[in-house]
Image (cartoon, rainbow, N blue to C red; front, top):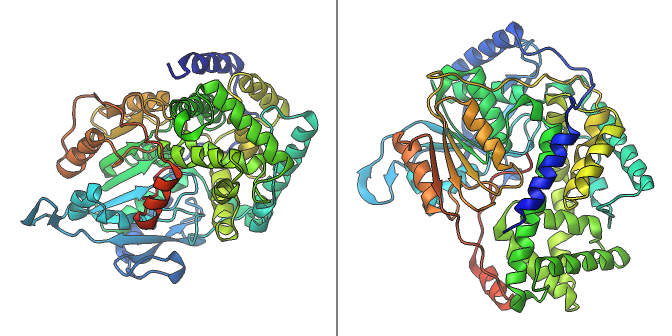
Length: 547
């Protein structure tokens, strides 16, 4: 069922391949007294200054109900009186309304701060979520607070290349690259790392997860909160766990949705290898679903036949790009999303189906790069790269990357090389690396943390949630069984949502572990159904992102 054997083979290969430390690059010492003093100074300053909320900048395209402000944090926490950067913060105050009892006034429980992951994700639009039915109870009790972390958007943005370079295409994306293609990608990775250093200068090293955790404590203080209530998804769970380790007495309640493996040995080289292995299983889940609905899509009545159809389309768009812009690289990027969210499955299956019937428009609309998105995407990629490269040692010898990923790609070809090219600038990084913090809390050090995980999550494999659960004493793990959507908080699973409500609204938790039956698979959509839905429905943007 659903390719567990293949996943096991990939995992075994990784264990064999990764018996030695992954990196030989220069690192900086673990955080010490200077950083602690700098954080104390910044927190005291934020407590006094607070945040003045007013109208949001027009380019954020937020309605008047959302108010924005800024909080200053040190670029370098060892120099708290030196250069400051401003983080943009958004908020919608608690409504004090009970959606089930209009006469009851709900007492305030303070601010709920949300981070969607990445690295590179912004939650400035998060406060809008309170109008959705699943979130209304929380919106009654909490001020919903979003923010752009350091480097993201308007918060001292990081850039590594001209955004116009992202609009070049169509591009190739071989699952078994040639030596000449590898040399080309190595050159591009070196140029990208050089661009990050040249565009950001000496400030580059300060964009890292430890500083994201420190910034979160400064934000807590600026909001006037003695203790932090926080929900993080994907990468947000990692620096949330760093926060719990660094500031245990400042934690009120924390929800970690789709938890990253916080083991220092996994950050981040091994983590990406394990992610690539897990994506192969989720890619197989998608193909099985498509095969079950062969009568709708006509892409093949077995998983293998669907794969052959997809590879056929890859070959065709290599010869004649769909819409003139979608080659194998753009096709691959669009279909990687099926590993994150199963509600993306129908649209992608339908786009392939239409293409095979001679209509390339749906595929072109789905996968073509757009000028409007280029600046934001470039910034997101830059922050992702800066944080992951700064956080930990990486191999600096290409032979290590080539060995590990060539082995892995034999059994997990779908994401493996794409993940390599995404992260390869870290091999040639020009800023010093951090030593990852040993995330761990002892009995009674922090209030119980609620961890949510889907068993077949590919972006943050389930073993990571188990490791997070082991390392955070007193934490509770809620598992969505036989499901793989990345980011399950307030999705379609009422059982999962019930546990979150009970915890955030009243502090109630189950015993150390609980589980929920997986939510139903998406229903296939025929073209006429998609047209009808398009007329009147706006879909919620899912939390998460690439961890």
